[in-house]
Structures are given as C-alpha cells and as structure tokens.
Image (cartoon, rainbow, N blue to C red; front, side):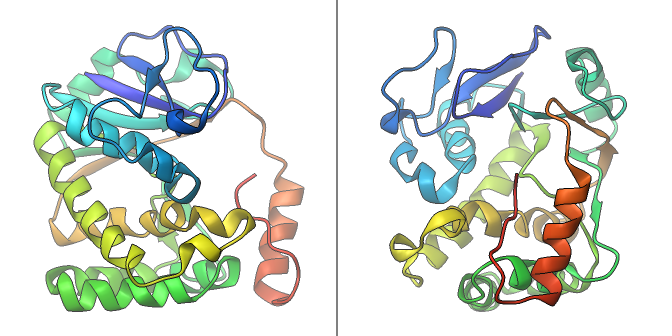
Length: 257
C-alpha cells in the first residue's frame, strides 16, 4: 500500500505506515528532501506540474506503482481522517484503510456542499469558462457513457473535491485511465500555456469534476471521511471569496488557499 502525500515543499509528514511524501514537479525543483519520492522517475509528466498540479503524482503512481495492492493520494496539508481537525494522529491508519476497502471500492473526503450554487456554476464563477465547456464536449464526443453523470455532477451542489482518494489497484487504474484520457484530449483543445496565475492549474481544477463522473457511471461504492487539515482554514476569508466570485464577476478570483 502506498498513499502518496503530494507536496511542493518540505513539510511535516505523518509517521503512519503506508504514507509516502512525493515532491510534485520534481523536474522543476532544485532540491528534493531526503526520503521524498520524486514524480520524475520512470514514465511521468513532472514538467507539466504547473498545469496538472497534484495530478503529476497520480500519473507517476499509475505507471510506477503497479505492484501495489492499494494506491491513494492526499495532500501535505489535507488527509482523510477518523474525525475532522488539525491533528496528524487522526489520519486514517493502514489497518483502517485495508479494513474499509474490504467493504467499499473507494475512500473519499466528505462531499463539499456549496448550498447556494451547483458545481457547474461554482466552477464557472471561479475559473475561465472555456475549459469546462471543452471538457463537456470531450466527454460527450469521446466518452458518451459518462456524459449523463457529468451533467448530473454539474447540477449537484455537492462534490468530492481535492483529487484525494484511496482505492485498490484495479479501480485506481480504471479511474486514472478515464481521467487522464479526458484531460489529454482537453489539453489538445485549449491554449492552457497562455493562462496566468491560478488558471495555469486548469487540469487540476477540471479533474475535481471527474471523480464523481467516474464514480457514478461505474456505480462504485464508497465511504466518506472528515478531512484533517494541518493548516487552519480562514472561513471568513474563504466565505468572502466565495461570495465575491458568485456576485461580483469582475472581481479578482481566489480559489484554493
């Protein structure tokens, strides 16, 4: 079992067995801390990290961790846990992961509920609109079996976000094949290298809408867990930014922080 902890900098890491820090965008870093995995070994897209964000770790895992029974991805400051909070002692243990995956297909963070807007509008209010519509076209044209679930995802106020999940090898390969095939086609159709600021991370943002699309199309079972956040969230700032994106379309946009 390998649960990758995607990070772009040295950081406090858990001692729990099964968790391995991986430096995303290793090809672009001057130094890699001792003991950290690198996403530029073997088949990889490490150089695409500015555009794919933590997905470069998932891509590396897809082709370089094929002998693992269980594969997952969390973030250096976000983990799946037994209860919400800021304590690394509360992240899922190796034994709990194995036990829970004997009952369901995928372990996921609790769905984020946006209450006053659906997932489609949330994306469009926060990001450039073209990539979302291009991805919808790609799914409709190239992956029609997934299109109904994609539309339903967009209409829902809830979604599994953060690109965090834990699953067995077969499900991991199926999910990542779908996700990267979709994103690769979108990559051919948008001028992503011209994007600036946070919009550069376009494929990381788009992929958050693909987990539920895959999950519900393939009728996978799942369990949800609270998110252990190592850094405390400024909910006043987060709420203010959310309302600005929704009601003041021309204001500066701040998404993940």
